[in-house]
Image (cartoon, rainbow, N blue to C red; front, top):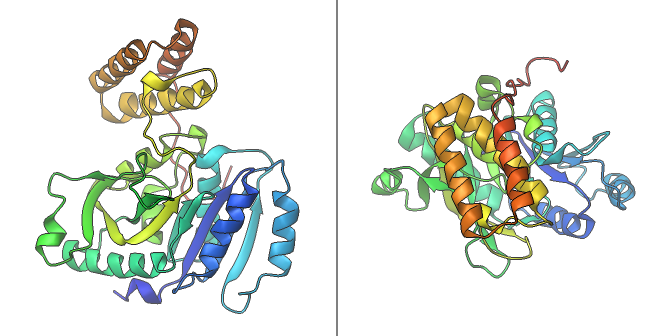
Length: 312
């Protein structure tokens, strides 16, 4: 198997109304010590100046001789899930061996991609060819750990370290802030559920593709996540401003647990959500909204979309 470092990488960034942060992301990409062969920017129907900026950026792209740039403009906001699905599909169609997906508020440090590709090769050396992804260490902009982007380690997370790969940790799921996914994974397991729109799409997808082999976090591949407030989230924090996000989260995770784990697992999740909202003294009308989404999860069961098949 050839080294990952020699393969065609498509960087995929999904953006929606975050132009100033997007500019920082693109500058971070241009500063990579190992440039991707392709850059795919998915404009999720932004309503700010993103479209006009990207037109100019594409025309004046300084790395045209090294990196092929593709702008994908979606007709409507498909959320993070729909954006990543569209961007990964485009990377596959353009022949990429890997897609490197990340958010429009994640700034990859200069060696992020280089370290990730080396880490993938080492993970394959240690675990075999079925490694489904590698992800970066995600830090907050002040250098501390990003509270909401910690991958979930396996029970034997230190196995690769015991083999001498000191910078690798085995994981079962991670966020889409910075993940490198090989082409064969998209062919075998499909794309993220675009119907999820936002929240839990990354957890479901990385859980789905680790059925036979865990993913790997590469500790010296670093991305800074510029997310405003560095804190995790749970259902005790539901309020009028964020209930729309938690509603997607309840429906999506409820659907995953009901259809892909067990009915008992789903019921335990419902109980956990209810107890968290009660503990946080969430307003009763907001609790009802979340509970309706938990019920909706029973009939919400998207089908896997494969990139090698044409879209309907």
